Image 1 (cartoon, rainbow, N blue to C red):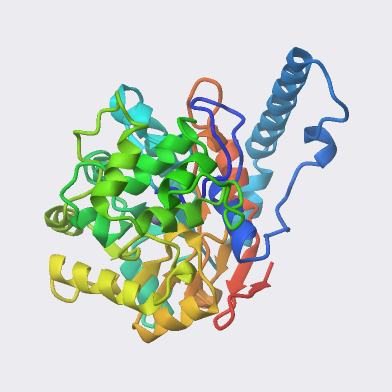
Image 2 (cartoon, protein in one colour):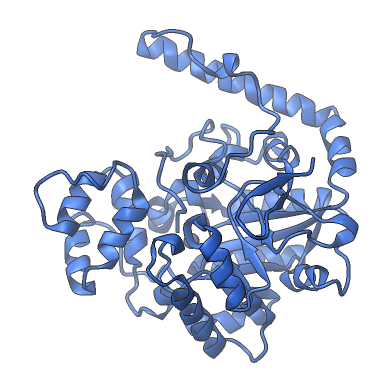
Length: 413
Ligand SMILES: [Zn+2]
């Protein structure tokens, strides 16, 4: 499930936003990471208005230039060499959502910003194996507890929400590569027998431009007046409004925008399928019960406890993934951290786009940053992975120690 609907991403665009996932945290509750190795703005920013066709040509040529520079830096060997030195005591956490074969109804209905093709996913795994040591969630928990250190350049592969394609498409690729991963599953969508997930349907209405935020807001609130309290593009408040509706009303409202869509195929995992993942080396962690932004809830702890209780009933006894949580939509504040710690979570995963400081192989904080992997940000016009783009996305992030009490950040490197 998307963590933020802030930018429309065109399917197949090679020049999509570089930080859809990571950028969202900066918009909401955290200071942005500003130490990225960025190209000069003068390269990317249009200087003056131009005729649309010329502007498009210019933007295309600039994107090509940026891609060429990234490839050059990567192929020179300097960037990988710098990464091997710089990341020797770090934990990188990558976020995926959906993994699907390209083409077909499922692919067409999946939000591009949060869906990666099976082939590119496999290429990402090859990249991870080349430049990192991929570790399991158990490895990270043990390291945090001081039981055994992480290896140099550790990387954890994570998936958010609990999509069925994680089992059907991503797992076989992980198994062929011999790599562990963790799925952070939101429990209400999994427990719902309906094939579709209303939050997925709502977001599809938006990214396919079938309805505007304001239109949906009016539907959910039953008012014809533009609501002052609902600024445009505030997906999270829109979700809260729809969550307050009874399920049948919500379904009927959204059905008006999804005629012609194939909503007969289940998109989320069923609870009984979680053990297929755990048996194959994929841990299951918590991602909230309602998948609503925790700071917007009246009782954050109740949602966390409910999700953990549900997962505990579905998973083998003592599954250690229950000690970890990824905050839905990446939203959290100091109260969220307190609630999560009081619930017993030993690791809390954000979408703060940083690499985690891990001196002597022990993560320095129980609050960890993660970096989103988006297809548009790492592929070329041929739809294949451009390793230079992925290297730039991962290697140059700031190394940080997220504050353990207030949600503040300390940049280490
Ligand atoms: Zn999510």
